[in-house]
Image (cartoon, rainbow, N blue to C red; front, side, top):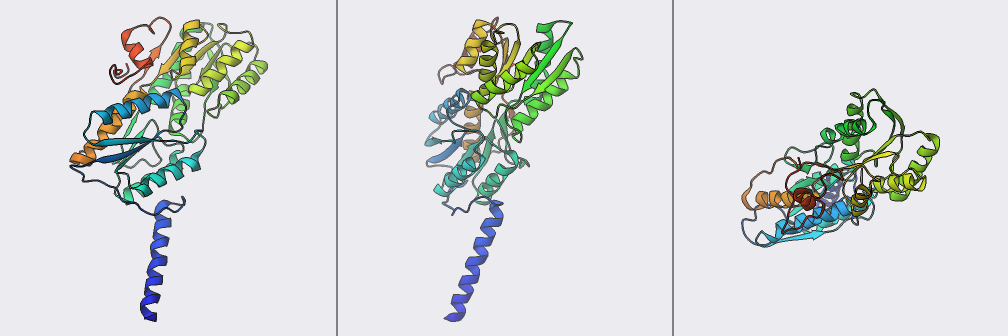
Length: 342
């Protein structure tokens, strides 16, 4: 009896060690089942954005729920942390979904390297994963990403600024949001690559918004104070755009400083309508949610491997925002879904 007890204890220690190693340092969670090969029966999916409470992610939510409503026996559970900087909170949330026994995981990574461990943990449990908006580093070959081509889209932002400022060019500020996320780093790369074609544009300041409106307002105020002759601002996500526009307005320079933003929250759209924001790089989060759910259901039901998808962007200005296609993009619904961007 002592010998058997000793062997059992050793086996338990080894199992615990393997679990910790497989999770790459994230908190330990016990497996709750789930997995692939469900040709029939109900499917439980967890869909997790970078954070809840943002217009962009609510549109992704609409798309995911719409796709599930058109499938048989597919249920989407939507949940997320309240701040995109809460990486550890997102890790715990995702691991808890795996513990509960979901059949598939759709999520946007808040931190590319840290969240890879979650994908690895899911794959060890035979639970398929799809990323939306932001993937991981490394990105497993069998985990597709439904996202914007952020580099290509951001490369065109300096073209928009140059067109607005004319041949004389001017001083430009850049407001990224969170270093270490794939989307932030790709937009930074694309924007700086695009600037190389425009020597008339001088990048004089780069300050992160940390995906927070108040932080964006403060750093933009500081930039304007340091560079009172600033000509243009590129803010790379929703909170950054809103905060930057507020700071420019408070400085009495609305309409005098060109603002190119990213995303299409109601306050951003209103800014385009009033002329405070010159253009928005508008993604297609509804399509991210819709196509990712269809993709992972196809993998679970039929074993079909989904592929990476560029969900497209549309450059929205005061001139085109009343077109039917842009209206569907700005206010997506299951009855009037947006088309792929152009």
